Length: 456
Image (cartoon, rainbow, N blue to C red; front, side, top):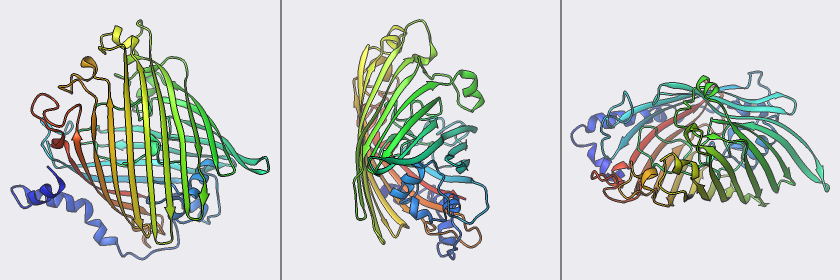
C-alpha cells in the first residue's frame, strides 16, 4: 500500500484508530512549535556554548564544526553551564505496514499499527583534557531489553605538520565506522532512525552493522590541514559472557578469529559554505561462523567508496551522501557446516540520499537503496523463493526540528525532531512479487513510520 492509499484508508474501517495513533505521535509538535526560544543550549552545546545548529545540519548529520568537535575528542569548551555531560534521548513512534504481519510485528505486538519506544542514556563530552566520549545505553521496547549502544571513547591532541594544523588521536569503539565523522558511512548513515516493527531485507554487508556492539576496536587517526583524514583500526569480538552482560545475545553471532583490520581515508575540500568529501573505507575479517569451531573460518572483505557534499547557508542547507560497498565472501567454513551452498559469494550495497533544510527547521530527504549479490539456496532460501539477496527501494522523510537554535524556556537544553518517514520497496529478498513463495509482494512491506525524537 502506497502512502496516498494508506492516508485514504484512514477514512475506512479502523481508520479512526490509525489516525488517532499517528496523531498521538505527531500532535506534540502543535503544542510546542511556537514555544519561546531560550539562550541556554542542548547537550554538547552546554559544554561549547554553541547552538545545536553549529554541530548539526538537522541532527544527527554533522557540520564541519561538528566533525572537528568529534575529531578533537569531544573536548571543546566555552559554555557557562555547570551541568555534567549527561543526556537522555527518547523516541516514541508509530509503525504502519502495507500488509499485516502474521503472528505480530514482534512478540507482544499486533500484526499492524503499532506504537514503539526506544530510550537512551548517554555520556557525551569532555572527561579530562584531551579525553572525551560518546557512550550510550539503550532500552528497546521491541525486544524489551537494555543494551549498550554505540561507544566512542577518544584521546585527541593537536600540533602541526609541514606548517599546517594536525589533529591526531585514538578512538576506542564498538562498531566499525562509528568513529567516522561523515554521514556517508554506515554507522551514522541515513535513515538515522527507522522502525524495528517493520520487515527489512535479509542481506547486508558485514560493515553495515554486522559487528555492531559485538566488538571492541582501537582506531588511531590523523586529520591534516582540515583536508585529509586517515585512520586504521583493529577489532576483536567480545566473548559470550561479556556480550550477555552488556545486553547483546551471542546466539547466532560469528566471532572474529584474531584481529580484523579496518581503514578509512577521506579528502574534504572546503570553499565558502561548501564542503565536498570523497573517500574509501573497509575492513577484512576472518570469522568463525556462528562460533562453531572445527571447520576453519570464513573470510569477508568489504571495500567501500563514499562521498558527501554539504552546502550550509543562513537560510537554506543542502546535503548529498552516497556510498557503494563491495563484499567478497569466502564461505569455506560455512559451506563445510552446511550454512551456505556456495564456497564463494559476493554482495554489493549502494545508498544515495539528498536532504534540504529550511532555516535548520523544516527538512525533506529522499533516498534510494539497493543490495544485490550471488544467489545461494542455503543462505537466502529460507526468506527468498529465488534464493537471492537482491532488494531495493526508496525512503522519503519529512522532518521538523524546532529547537536547533536553542530550546524552550521550560527546558532550555531540549532538542527534538518530529519525523514522518515512508519506505517503498520495489524488490524485496529477490523479487518484486511473490518473493517468499507465499504470495507476498515487495510493496506489501511498505512502511509508514511516524516518530518524535527528543534529546535533553
